[in-house]
Length: 349
Image 1 (cartoon, rainbow, N blue to C red):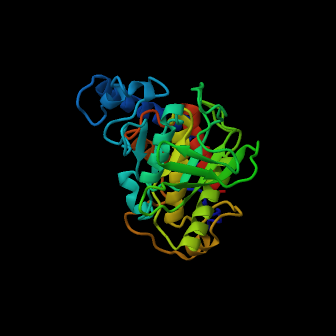
Image 2: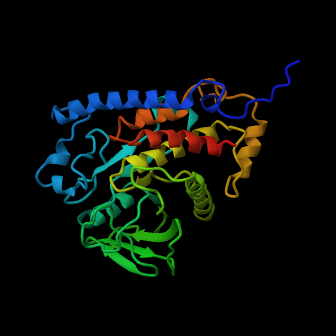
Image 3: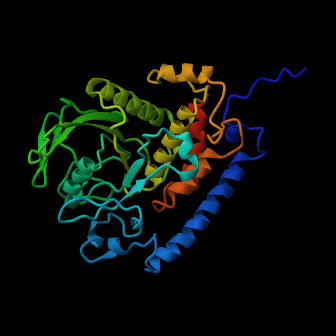
């Protein structure tokens, strides 16, 4: 009689499934990079393709890119209402093959560069227009908001203050104190006094200050805390405002809006898939929705076309392969790609 323990990790994370996980991940990432090289050849060829960068290289827009080699694809670029509609930002949507394995109201992300001093008003207009309620900042920032620095500049008011952005947007920082912790959560309000509604929108800004550029954190604990804090905050907001499902994409940025940004989006999407299919073996966390775990343990049958966590199907690869078609360089290094697997594994045990 076989008394082997029942596997609890998703199939693609089980050590017995492949002789060398690291080798497999390295090869998979090389394949993703090769496909991207083909897309970039089309993009830099300036042909009118889905992957064109044309709008990002016009005389009046080229200066609005923080880095000259990180540009937004045309087909997924976010447009902003106003005199300067250009933003170095792309919509990141549910991978087509995983849409039945994600909630119907999964709104995805806006992956963008850190706002420049001259694009901060456009950034806040994008937040308002795209129905954004959560912003994730994955880089340290300079407190000098008027001069372009090397990596990122602060684009929110100081604690207890209200600042105007452009002619008609106001942002208030409701917190009375700031923090030097690795992760800082800021509660903001955004409103447009000139609009008919003139309602104040609550914004959660999760600021992860300890993630090294081009590198990975020492552990996934802070990322896991951010993801569960966002979910808990949304549940609380929905309970208070009775607006379930009325949330747009999460804005995620680092400095360039590709490496750390892509890593966060991949891990968070993998978590959303595993939550939606009622994966039953999540690691405990004080902010996890206990009702989801109870439903998962009682669920006997999955939808036929839903992601099956017991199979070898590689969730991380599928997600990143799709995201790379919407913004270049999402997850920039092999180390960041391997960290995605490690972080998802940490969520599951």
